[in-house]
Amino acid sequence: MRMSSNAAPVVAPVAVRAAGPSRPGPVAVVAAAFTLAQLLLVPPGMGLGWDETVYVSQVSPHAPAAFFSAPRTRGVPLLVAPVVVWTSSTGVLRVYLAVLSGVGLYLALRAWRGLFPARALALAGALFASLWMTLFYGPQAMPNHWVAIGALGCVGCFLRARNDPEDRTALWGAGAATALMAWMRPTDTVWVTLPLFTLLVLVRRWWRPRLLGVMAAGLATGALAWVVEAYAQFGGPARRLADASRIQGGLGWNIAVDDQMRSLVGRTLCRPCTGDLPHPAVIAWWFVLPVLAALGLAVAVRAGRATPTLVPLVCAAMAAVPYLFLIGYAAPRFLLPTYALLAIPVADALWDLVRGPGGAWRPVAGAVVALGLVGHLAVQYVVLERTVTRTTAFHRDWDRVAAELRRLGVRPPCLLTGDYAIPIAYYAGCSSGHTSGNNANITRDGILRTADRMPVAALVAPGGGPPEYARGWPAREVAGFRLHVAPPGGRALTGAWPRRP
Image 1: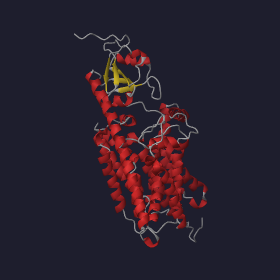
Image 2: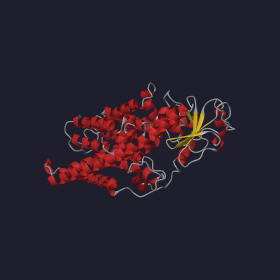
Image 3: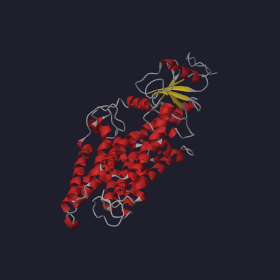
Image 4: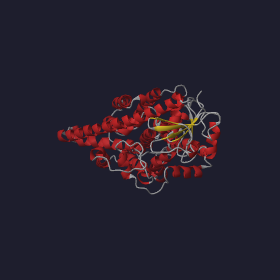
């Protein structure tokens, strides 16, 4: 680091394109359109999914808290708490999250001001926001979208703070974005920020002690909460990591690239991930994405501004590593941070394709890019519509089961066990219990003792069978489920059902 005569450090600026005055207009329009698209394409009344019921139940007074397994963190419950503590309305929660995700996208893109032109940032936001998994998970109480927003904002603020150490907004923005990621998923945060910390610590001209401290503090906020809970609930950090690895099928060398491709057709959880690959039209964009990212890097190198493009590309690649090579299953939401970070270099490449030297339009290239984007949007919409329709049907079935349980007298306080007990218990206002598996939190005897003092039911999905202790319980069928309801009056163990008068 060179020192001036007054001992003030002289910062070697990041080489960037002259972007002109910062204009929030296009980015704000994209963020607003993103919020509106969520409300129109993902109905607020869709109902809560399995993982959502776990997160929401931790802070909701309207249902008992579900079992919170080792891989989960407390970021999402904190995010939804301002709404769910006073209303059980899923629609209100969806609107709140859709608006919040639009604001988050706007702030994350604004973090890149001065590094890329406003038109590139707006296009990047549109590319990311138009993916079916972004629209689907934006209004959901899930962590992955917020890790993506945090990653996008963190890298942008990092580059600005490195370029101008006096930019306090960028400095604290980097810390806040790191904290957001850490509260949502600490392990994902490590992968995303590893290249950034490496540059700060190992490359002398990147050394920025204040930036390093602020980002480390942001990471520590989420990590500390995770460690405290590990000691309180799971026997320590090592045991919690081991449990999380077991629940995720054993972390290790697993090629999940083909699994991720299979999930692009709208499979929200691909586990086990079998079957044929989707139609080429559905997965074509996945192969075009790294090509355009590489083109974006080539454009940046040619223009002498490689750093703002190379850094997000490296962070995007690192964010994808665990989900492409270290777990044995897939979900489209896992790669949302990677897609968010790739969006800016890809948008820059697309603008370079359609505009020649001096800013002149290239009609042929422009037409090809426009047709490609229209086709891409059509595919994303079709997959989104099918995914929303299928998911809504599942959630309606769960609601029908909950209604039937109430009709049978299974009302709060109550306990459900068996297949899909966790989400249906939330719908019914009951607790959920499992005697085995990843969510084991009660014993057989514990269930039978509970049946002596409150309503208990065992749920059996199509093709399954009831637990041995519930085989004598009277059964009802609804929405494909068999509901085995424990006899009242302490007769759960014998299965004796009192005769109606």
